[in-house]
Length: 91
Image (cartoon, rainbow, N blue to C red; front, side, top):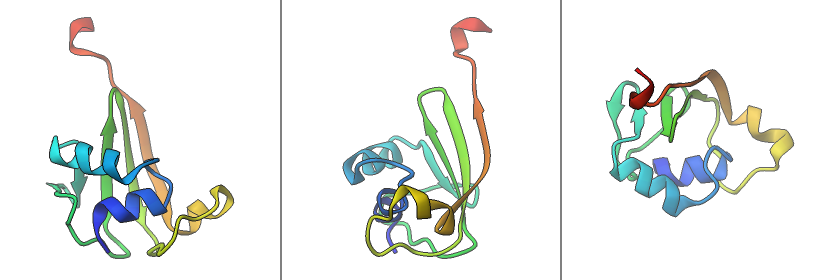
């Protein structure tokens, strides 16, 4: 399944166009490599997403063919790690 479609269907990112833009900007990695929106993901892959100052890492548990309800999102993508980074101006 395409990365941008998975991120949207699993509820990690609200819109597929936003997932595509973040990926094009280099803010999404799959298994440690910068990923394009068309990157194929499958169960077991690790996805790292940076939106602004928030960084989150997920493990793909199962593929979601359709958008899943909020209560079922853990069945498709398991949150491994989440952190908030400081902006460069604070360093």
